[in-house]
Length: 188
Image: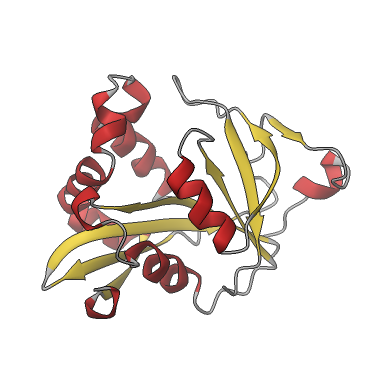
Protein backbone atom coordinates (compact mmCIF):
# COMPACT_ATOMS: atom_id res chain seq x y z
CA UNK A 1 0.00 0.00 0.00
CA UNK A 2 2.93 2.38 0.59
CA UNK A 3 3.24 2.95 -3.17
CA UNK A 4 -0.14 4.75 -3.08
CA UNK A 5 1.05 7.18 -0.42
CA UNK A 6 1.25 10.82 -1.45
CA UNK A 7 3.55 13.13 0.51
CA UNK A 8 3.01 16.84 0.97
CA UNK A 9 5.81 19.02 2.37
CA UNK A 10 5.25 21.92 4.75
CA UNK A 11 7.38 24.59 6.41
CA UNK A 12 6.71 25.62 9.98
CA UNK A 13 4.55 28.55 8.90
CA UNK A 14 2.58 26.38 6.48
CA UNK A 15 1.76 23.84 9.19
CA UNK A 16 -0.38 26.40 10.99
CA UNK A 17 -2.93 26.08 8.17
CA UNK A 18 -3.33 22.33 8.89
CA UNK A 19 -3.11 22.38 12.67
CA UNK A 20 -6.32 20.34 13.09
CA UNK A 21 -5.05 17.69 10.68
CA UNK A 22 -1.77 17.41 12.59
CA UNK A 23 -3.64 16.93 15.87
CA UNK A 24 -5.96 14.36 14.29
CA UNK A 25 -3.10 12.29 12.85
CA UNK A 26 -1.36 12.32 16.23
CA UNK A 27 -4.54 11.18 18.00
CA UNK A 28 -4.99 8.29 15.56
CA UNK A 29 -1.30 7.39 15.54
CA UNK A 30 -0.72 7.52 19.28
CA UNK A 31 -4.08 6.10 20.39
CA UNK A 32 -2.45 3.49 22.65
CA UNK A 33 -0.06 5.99 24.26
CA UNK A 34 -2.89 8.46 24.82
CA UNK A 35 -4.94 5.69 26.46
CA UNK A 36 -2.29 5.32 29.19
CA UNK A 37 -3.50 8.61 30.65
CA UNK A 38 0.03 10.03 30.83
CA UNK A 39 -0.46 13.77 30.28
CA UNK A 40 2.74 13.89 28.18
CA UNK A 41 1.07 11.60 25.61
CA UNK A 42 -2.11 13.67 25.25
CA UNK A 43 -2.94 15.40 21.99
CA UNK A 44 -3.10 18.72 23.85
CA UNK A 45 0.44 18.32 25.21
CA UNK A 46 1.66 17.16 21.80
CA UNK A 47 0.19 20.24 20.13
CA UNK A 48 1.78 22.52 22.75
CA UNK A 49 5.17 21.01 21.89
CA UNK A 50 4.36 21.18 18.18
CA UNK A 51 3.65 24.90 18.44
CA UNK A 52 7.17 25.41 19.83
CA UNK A 53 8.84 23.08 17.33
CA UNK A 54 7.15 24.59 14.27
CA UNK A 55 8.74 27.98 14.99
CA UNK A 56 12.31 26.61 14.94
CA UNK A 57 14.37 27.77 11.96
CA UNK A 58 14.50 25.11 9.26
CA UNK A 59 11.49 23.17 10.57
CA UNK A 60 10.04 20.87 7.91
CA UNK A 61 7.20 18.38 7.87
CA UNK A 62 5.81 15.79 5.50
CA UNK A 63 2.21 14.63 5.61
CA UNK A 64 1.28 11.25 4.11
CA UNK A 65 -2.13 10.76 2.56
CA UNK A 66 -3.92 7.76 1.06
CA UNK A 67 -6.68 8.71 -1.35
CA UNK A 68 -6.53 12.22 0.10
CA UNK A 69 -6.92 11.02 3.70
CA UNK A 70 -4.07 11.93 6.14
CA UNK A 71 -2.50 8.75 7.54
CA UNK A 72 0.90 9.86 8.85
CA UNK A 73 3.34 12.68 9.43
CA UNK A 74 6.97 13.29 10.24
CA UNK A 75 8.80 16.46 11.15
CA UNK A 76 12.07 17.86 12.38
CA UNK A 77 14.70 20.55 11.96
CA UNK A 78 18.48 21.06 11.76
CA UNK A 79 20.16 21.63 15.11
CA UNK A 80 21.91 24.98 15.42
CA UNK A 81 24.65 26.10 17.81
CA UNK A 82 22.08 27.26 20.40
CA UNK A 83 20.01 24.06 20.42
CA UNK A 84 18.69 22.63 23.66
CA UNK A 85 18.00 19.27 21.98
CA UNK A 86 20.91 17.57 23.74
CA UNK A 87 20.06 18.85 27.26
CA UNK A 88 20.02 15.85 29.60
CA UNK A 89 21.98 13.58 27.22
CA UNK A 90 23.97 10.75 28.78
CA UNK A 91 26.21 9.12 26.18
CA UNK A 92 26.89 5.38 26.13
CA UNK A 93 30.49 4.21 26.62
CA UNK A 94 32.58 4.42 23.47
CA UNK A 95 31.03 7.64 22.16
CA UNK A 96 33.00 10.86 21.59
CA UNK A 97 33.14 13.37 24.41
CA UNK A 98 29.82 15.03 25.25
CA UNK A 99 31.20 18.39 24.12
CA UNK A 100 32.29 17.00 20.74
CA UNK A 101 29.13 14.97 20.22
CA UNK A 102 26.75 17.86 20.97
CA UNK A 103 28.60 20.64 19.14
CA UNK A 104 26.16 21.85 16.46
CA UNK A 105 26.33 24.43 13.69
CA UNK A 106 23.11 23.91 11.72
CA UNK A 107 24.72 21.46 9.27
CA UNK A 108 25.79 18.54 11.45
CA UNK A 109 22.54 17.04 12.76
CA UNK A 110 18.90 16.87 11.67
CA UNK A 111 16.59 16.22 14.61
CA UNK A 112 13.71 13.94 13.66
CA UNK A 113 11.21 15.02 16.28
CA UNK A 114 8.19 12.94 15.32
CA UNK A 115 7.25 10.16 12.94
CA UNK A 116 3.77 8.73 13.31
CA UNK A 117 1.31 6.65 11.33
CA UNK A 118 -2.40 6.16 11.95
CA UNK A 119 -2.67 2.90 13.92
CA UNK A 120 -5.10 1.49 11.32
CA UNK A 121 -2.46 1.92 8.61
CA UNK A 122 0.69 0.60 10.32
CA UNK A 123 2.67 -2.27 8.87
CA UNK A 124 2.24 -1.05 5.29
CA UNK A 125 5.53 0.77 4.78
CA UNK A 126 4.13 4.26 5.35
CA UNK A 127 6.63 5.04 8.11
CA UNK A 128 9.50 4.31 5.71
CA UNK A 129 7.96 6.54 3.05
CA UNK A 130 7.66 9.35 5.60
CA UNK A 131 11.21 8.84 6.87
CA UNK A 132 12.75 8.85 3.40
CA UNK A 133 10.53 11.73 2.29
CA UNK A 134 11.46 13.95 5.22
CA UNK A 135 15.17 13.24 4.82
CA UNK A 136 15.29 13.48 1.01
CA UNK A 137 17.81 16.10 -0.01
CA UNK A 138 18.96 16.85 3.54
CA UNK A 139 22.57 18.04 3.76
CA UNK A 140 23.19 17.23 7.44
CA UNK A 141 25.80 14.60 8.32
CA UNK A 142 23.50 12.62 10.62
CA UNK A 143 19.94 12.32 11.79
CA UNK A 144 18.96 11.81 15.42
CA UNK A 145 15.75 11.00 17.19
CA UNK A 146 14.47 9.78 20.52
CA UNK A 147 12.63 6.51 20.99
CA UNK A 148 10.82 5.14 23.99
CA UNK A 149 12.63 1.84 24.66
CA UNK A 150 9.27 0.23 25.47
CA UNK A 151 8.14 0.81 21.87
CA UNK A 152 9.66 -2.42 20.56
CA UNK A 153 8.02 -2.29 17.12
CA UNK A 154 9.29 1.20 16.37
CA UNK A 155 12.71 0.36 17.76
CA UNK A 156 13.01 -2.65 15.41
CA UNK A 157 12.07 -0.52 12.41
CA UNK A 158 14.58 2.18 13.33
CA UNK A 159 17.37 -0.38 13.69
CA UNK A 160 16.40 -1.77 10.29
CA UNK A 161 16.89 1.75 8.90
CA UNK A 162 20.45 1.74 10.26
CA UNK A 163 19.89 3.61 13.51
CA UNK A 164 22.13 2.88 16.46
CA UNK A 165 21.73 3.84 20.08
CA UNK A 166 24.30 6.33 21.38
CA UNK A 167 22.85 7.18 24.79
CA UNK A 168 19.78 8.21 26.76
CA UNK A 169 18.07 11.54 27.26
CA UNK A 170 15.50 12.86 29.69
CA UNK A 171 13.68 15.79 28.01
CA UNK A 172 12.53 18.72 30.12
CA UNK A 173 8.90 18.34 28.99
CA UNK A 174 6.75 17.44 32.00
CA UNK A 175 5.97 13.72 32.13
CA UNK A 176 8.41 12.80 29.35
CA UNK A 177 9.99 9.36 29.66
CA UNK A 178 13.73 8.70 29.48
CA UNK A 179 14.35 8.05 25.81
CA UNK A 180 17.04 6.19 23.94
CA UNK A 181 18.96 8.49 21.57
CA UNK A 182 19.39 7.09 18.08
CA UNK A 183 21.72 8.26 15.30
CA UNK A 184 21.71 7.27 11.63
CA UNK A 185 22.98 8.36 8.24
CA UNK A 186 20.33 10.75 6.82
CA UNK A 187 20.54 9.05 3.41
CA UNK A 188 18.55 5.87 4.06
